[in-house]
Image (cartoon, rainbow, N blue to C red; front, side, top):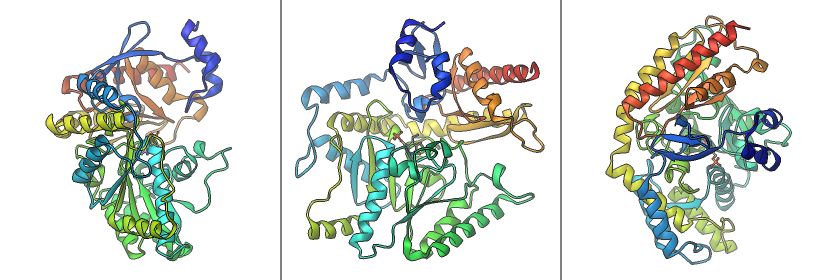
Length: 454
Ligand code: PMP
């Protein structure tokens, strides 16, 4: 029986990333408020937000300082544009701060409101730069199977998941996908992690040579893949990939939309995974998701090319109404201040130890084929047979069953197919980590019983 709110929802909204058919019967879980790592539904039931919203509310809910930063800026100047020679203090200060903490030599910062917009901007800047440099053929961007980079036309094309392409006539031209660095799923029999990483780098090189290096402009990667299933690459994967990119003058774009700002126990995921990015996308935890904001961090070489082009053609013709939105920028600045002042990254790195210990211990659970993760993000992949790694039939919906049982236990997690993802707010304590895994273990046991009952 759906509640009144749920009925109004079903009659009114098209929900993102939702099975529109089953949703009509099941209706939504309506969340009303949040506090710390918990959110509460309309009946007042608390849940541990085990996915930090959508991998984003790093400082948890009801952070009074963020609310106050928004209130102050909203009262002072709720909006002002930064098009065509206008500016304001929050955008300038946030840009400076991002340059200061970036894991690469960054020349300039371009603001937008989301991860998708950041990655769309990356595509456009790569194309714009190469036109400016007089090499208009160098336009292809290589992404990876199972990558997640967003849902706008260019960013959805970069995304390497079939649900984001099927029936949308995507990907667009000039976007290619190379192999996914998931050893558990894609290594050949007996292949070590090292040999797997070597093979993937060789496959990337073959792709670049096949396409013609003069046509390949950039490679984009999340340090740890998120929505594709929380995939941690082999240790030497990125150094090997990076060596190939350098041979053919192919830019490395790091999509730090999930990994940025402490998720992996380092300020940026690039540092943890030995990536030397040329250009970087951020969003989500930049403002702890209190307001939508994203950014592209641009290297000097790209900026100089853009500057030259602008000298020739005039206006740099790209920008969003909400680029550098003053209230979003003020909240992001406050967020970064709190990360630094309270050593949130150090805290995340410390709590990551028991988090990963509890996560990896679940590899022993009869349903789990692989327990993987890094820092404060992880996933548990449910399989029908541990030895062969065979999955359950998709239609059985085992992952969805597990997340539904977790909800009953008062835990919000997300299933990506039959992988159950965890990505709690970075402020989570060790005791709360234990509580979260106790609830998840009960949900897994319940899933096992449900399967056994046929
Ligand atoms: N890149 C990554 C790595 C992401 O995880 C996401 C969102 N899950 C995006 C880009 C897209 O961000 P948004 O949903 O804010 O457009």
